[in-house]
Length: 333
Ligand code: NAD
Ligand code: DAU
Image (cartoon, rainbow, N blue to C red; front, top):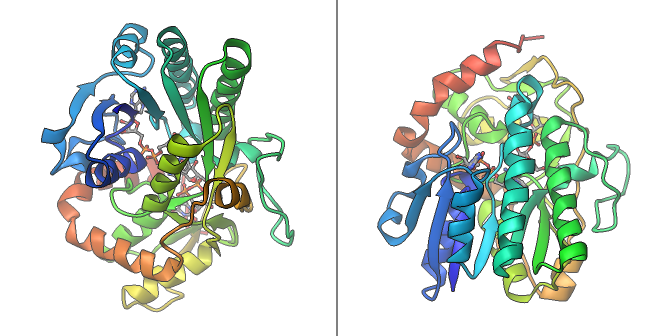
């Protein structure tokens, strides 16, 4: 099976490539990645010799067409992925997330190639802290940020291409991932590397926002379950019952790194900040028989902290620029 992985030099895509090469000897991987600030060849260290790596944009229709023509399956991870960046500079989100998905859909339509679309639970908006509700495949779309609205737009393009043109596609909407090789702009790596550098973690607003954490390897094993056994044209939500509020995450990071659990600062809140995400992944379990392997967030977090301690050469080149972007808008409250 020849698999084209877009965004394979980013966080989730690179972990997908590592997992695929380790578990699926029958798969040949081509990576298409623009190597933006969020992508790095170093995320594919150890496997670069085993994949075909193409540097380029998903909006480049001619390039995408030639790569899709040579693939049996496309797994589309490439995106502008960070909410805070979408608030200061939304343009690249429209180009990559919407126009890039359009080019891939047209190419898979021309060549009759199977397509899996990677998306996010943020397309559903947010939930109240005190509600028992969780997102399901039937929850109406209600995105809040430029990031989540462009992801929602891309999902709707996929649904339209399925219905109008009969392409063979599936969609997954996953909750917040954690694990190795996540860019230091994101919440957990940012706090871990701040502590390594002797600074205090930073919580947006009151810090009570809830995210539903899943280990990146569980996200990727679910993606393979959908590629292998998912029903064409359908959407699957991916989660692992990992709801924790941001204060709880920061306290655990601090305790695991031998610092007092309350040694953090509150900073300017994110405009439009979604309060809570929560995923009901019953369909994935009942229809496809998938289960997450990482059931204990604290031990997964401890392993992730170890990874950042052991791999400073991977994250250090990103750190100053990421903190400079935050410094432009963020103030300690
Ligand atoms: P990331 O920012 O770490 O990686 C994105 C990758 O895409 C990078 O390698 C970057 O170079 C590449 N890229 C960006 N623009 C491109 C373009 N125009 N053409 C080609 N390549 C381009 O993102 P991530 O966190 O790994 O997210 C991957 C996917 O998973 C995204 O679609 C995101 O919406 C989705 N997702 C992420 C999470 C999460 O918690 N991180 C959860 C659910 C879904
Ligand atoms: O839910 C899935 C989504 O999860 C993905 O679609 C996105 O690509 C991914 O970036 C992530 O979005 P979030 O906005 O939830 O993740 P982020 O890591 O930016 O922030 C997680 C929470 O932590 C959120 O409530 C904001 C808060 N936060 C973040 C940073 C960077 C802080 O309190 N302090 C911080 O310094």
